[in-house]
Length: 357
Image 1 (cartoon, helix red, strand yellow):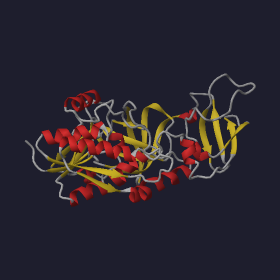
Image 2 (cartoon, rainbow, N blue to C red):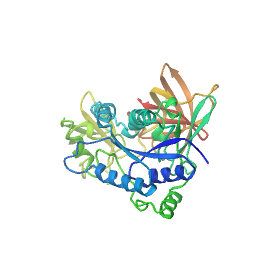
Image 3 (cartoon, rainbow, N blue to C red):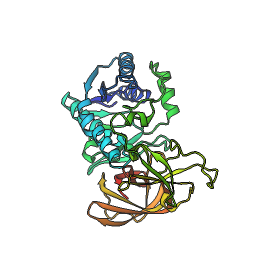
Image 4 (cartoon, helix red, strand yellow):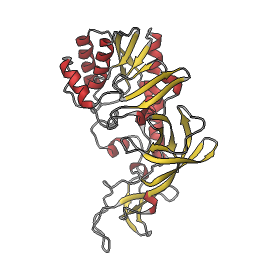
C-alpha cells in the first residue's frame, strides 16, 4: 500500500474521477481540488457549474474532501490574454499547452502543496518516471489517448511530486473501472474543444475580442477572388468558412488557406492540396523548452506538430541560441506558427517549441 497525501485535480470528468479512485485504492490519502479557470460566460457556454456538481458527486461517492479554488485571474492573464495576442499577431496559439504550463502545474501544484499534499495528480494520459536526476515525462501506454503533447511546455521541476494514475490504461479500461466502482459520472461524455469557447462557433467567440479587419482573398496566382473579415479568424490549412464559392475557370475543388500576408492584410488560398507552402520538411521553433535534454542528443528523434498525430521521424538540424530547426523525413502539412512541435526520444517526451517558421 502507498502512503502520503495526494490532491487530485477533479474536473468533473470520468478521467480525474478514476484517477482519484485508483489512488485511494492504492492506499494514498486522497482529496480533490476543483479549479475554476473561467467565469466570464453570460451566454452559458461554459460548463463550470455543471462540472463542479459532477466533481462534488464523485468526491461524495469516494468519501474524500473536495476543495474549490478560483484561478480565473491567473488564467485570464497567463493563458487567455496570450491566446488573444497570438491570434492578433496572425498565429494559431494552443491554449491547452498554455493552461497546463501556466495554471495546472503552477498555481494548482503550489496551492496543493501549501494545503499539505505530498503529491498532486491529474487524469492526464501520460506517465512520469521519478528518477535520481529528476522526473522524466513518458508517453501513455495507449498511444491513441496519449496527452504528453499538451504537457510538453511544463517546466521539468513542476513534474516533481506529480502522479498520472491513468498512464498505463486505455480509455475503455478507465470507463470500465468507473462503472464497476459505481462512480456517478461513469457515462459522462468527454469534454471537447476549448473551455472558454464551449460549443459556440469559434469565429463568433473571437469576434467578441478582436475587431474585424476586412481585406482581400487572393488565389495563389495573385487574383482577388473574395473578401475576409480579418486574418485572425483564419489559420493555415483551413478549408471551411472561406465563403469563396464556385469560380469561373477554377476547379470544382475546395479552397485551403495557404498563407496570411500580414503587411497587405491579404489571405492567400489555393486548391492545390500539394502546394509547396502547405508542405515543409524543415520546421523552426523559438524558443525551445527542454524538459530533459539528453547528452549526446540522439541523431534520430521523433516529433508531433499536433495532438494525436502519428510520430514523425526527424533530426535537429540547426541551433541558433534558443531557435532550433528540425528536419523531417516526410513533408509535414500545415505547420502553423503558434502551434507547437513536441519532441520525443522513444517513449520519452523531451520538450517542445512554438513553431515560428
